[in-house]
Length: 341
Image (cartoon, rainbow, N blue to C red):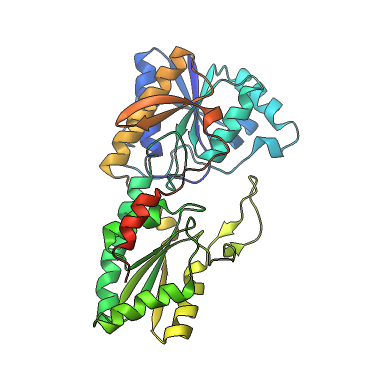
């Protein structure tokens, strides 16, 4: 078979491991694998890259994507879906492996109605896709955020400051919660639990009263005060209708200094969470996903996504994934609250 592979949306450590696995497994089946540059835009423009053993050699530990990525939505372009199907036909693609999050896989699901045969691979550092225990890239993002907390702990203690670490996650708090637990944060704020400023300040006062003159707060970019709305960096939206979140850390810092008088600093981790080499966990998970995706193609299970469940790799219909969001486990958040303040 002639199989295309693309990566769409934000990059995540492990994409190259998926590409490598798809090529290697495809060759075992006697397939020809073709890279599609820059996500769905590559199919719109007919931008392809032949993939073989030499082109994927050495890419396992590399971050980013050798194919590039974009937030292109073909359904926002006039005649986009029809053009994609035509380009795929002209390139002789019999199937497409789409590596992405809810937006990229949502396009794959809708294109199934147009005749494009797709298999999805769940990719997002946010870990917010339903149907899979973990998405690759999440473990690496948590490891990076945890290391940042370890480093911030020493400088916060030395200067007797409150330091706020703002992390990614969009509308879920998986990164914030896991990194906060692993890094010993004194307060963790997530979108699933709108916060009360006075309650946050009370945690900090409580620590000061027992002689702890510094504190670490982890806040997810989508966290918001109770009764308020998310704080955005920009109101402009991408092709999938998303605003750019960011700034909640600075909002918190101003209010904490105003209400408590405690010197407060902010670190926005931003795209550092996406960059660099994937952890061993993400390399292995991405590799397993890539192998399984090619197997799904040969089983004819299109409009499905590979997923991790209970340690095993399974397939999930995209119809059960799209339009839903996996939120933080409330029981895990209750564990974290034991250590607040």
